[in-house]
Image (cartoon, rainbow, N blue to C red):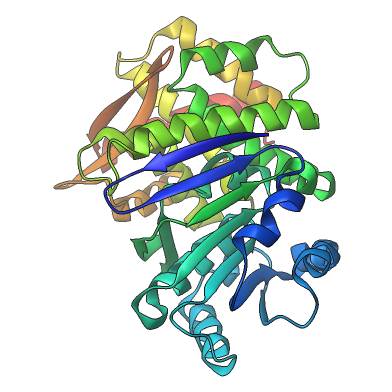
Length: 355
């Protein structure tokens, strides 16, 4: 077991990482009046663990699984059920699920009575390696991912790999998407992934979660509210990932992050700011995790990037991998962005077929 302490001007909180942390810490950090938010799949698998630690009969809201649950309608339902359950200002909202549950639970905690205590128990590899810290909460709105939200950090986090045993291959792939994203800004992590023969297993994932959260914690502490530009590196590949996710809606967030990393590295390569040798190494790492990410109608998907929060003026902003351990900010007109996405997609189709 390891701990990461995150200190910002707004909050100080501890992340408990490693096997056995749920059994050791859950009953300690969840006491008094509390309200659990989970999703259908996670609660079906693990409700008995919650009952063993917290007892049965506690108030719980079960969200639909997947991105569709990230809506104002669902947020209203959560707040309504909290009110019906008589939650007071000193209650604790417990997120028990993946990134979508964490976003919704965090936003509900931030809004209810202008803010109540919030605890994260992430159950997916993606949520444990990335979204459980940093304080970003949001709902999708107007077809745009994470358009409306706020910063609201948790009081404590439990990141226990015991929950990975029920994850699907897609869930693992999604988590690896965010882990590889972290590797684009950490040379040592990139080397570990590149040299690792098997990107799986509890010990491997436990180590990756600790490495990624330690890296993210160091960045978040420098740029708590994403205002200084330091935190932008955590959005490597995400402009294109969110554009694809909003347009196609067939894959999961982490899979689109993998695709976004590849497409944005390709854009950087074609603009002369990405090292060619590094591009090939990153490409090989991405393709170890997923098939070559060919997409049809990629020019139409590109238009979704116009709503990205990082944009300024009329240009699309991408945070692209450019060299080992380094990302760079690139601002280009939509026409150039769209053309390069199409060129990349056509090359993939020619090399690998429509995967």
